[in-house]
Amino acid sequence: MARFAFLLSVFLLFSFQIQGSRPATPVFVQTGGDVLLDVVEVGGSEECDLVNWKFNKTILVRFLCSSGSQSKPSVEDPRIEFFTRNYTMKIKNLRESDSGIYTARKIGREEKMLAEYKVTVQDAVSPAELTVGSVLNSSTSCNLTVTCSTGPSKISSTVRCDTETCSQEGGEQPLITKHGDSLLVYLSNKSIICNHSNHVSWLNDTRHIQHLCPHLSGSGGISYLVWVIVGAVLFILIILIILIILVILVRLKREKKFSVNGDENTTENTVYASPAVEMAQVQDPGSTNEASPNTIYSALAGPSTENKPLPQSLYAAIEKSPKP
Image (cartoon, rainbow, N blue to C red; front, side, top):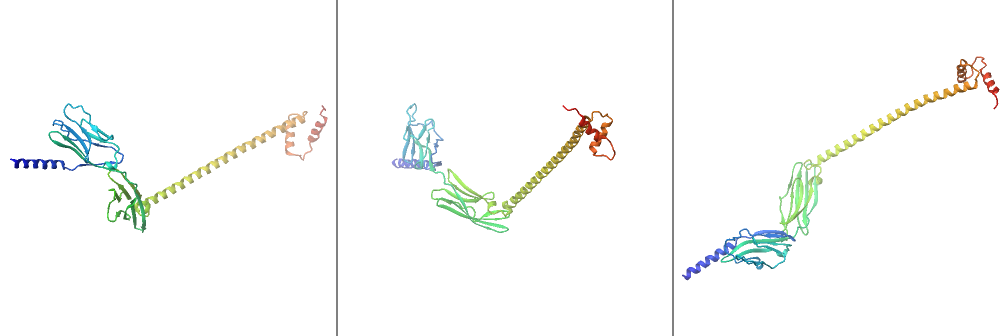
């Protein structure tokens, strides 16, 4: 009987250890962030006297879960918020020292594991930097040596490109830094990318191969040259169109100016002819209308070969005019 009781206790202990030795759920949190640790199976129908949360071996929360109990949970850290309905715990403003194993247990007639988490608190990664060590160009290929680095950690790689494709010598080989971060250099859409990442953040630096190997058609060099030529041709066409428009406008302006000047000359001739007639009529008031045209035309045409008394009559009329 005693032997049977001993074997039963060993079996129960072994079963409990197997139940408690299941792998903890991994959780990664960035420094300064919050984490919510919930309980999937509450098991409210079973007897419950106490629920507690532990960090490693330190008790963080105690809660009396007996039926009808109105007690408040005992919380050891002010950053912790505990929800009595489902025994969930929230921790705010995590620090790197908060990394570890968190367990929730319900203790009654039997002790039961409610949840187990392995929390890892990580800082955001530092910026990545991609540098090009050397570029070897030929008419049909381009070889690049690049280095991906962050702080003291760095990884180098060689990229080979032809007119169609690019390949990375040795493939993608990530480097795990001493902080557990990953440093990786790889190709994507004809670009070289240096990536520094961990479980909570990532940063990268990118270089386009077409800027490093512009002569390769596969890298977009020819298309870039075509766009440059097309742009230059369009610019020249626009300049020519503007010049043609300016020439047309100048010619129209000159033709309009010449037309206006011709009209002015005609008007001036007509104006000067009228005062001549009036002067002739005033100077020889005794003359008849029939003689006036001869006098006017004679004055305009100058001296005549015929012996006419017009000049003597004109001067006589001026001398005989009464004095005021």
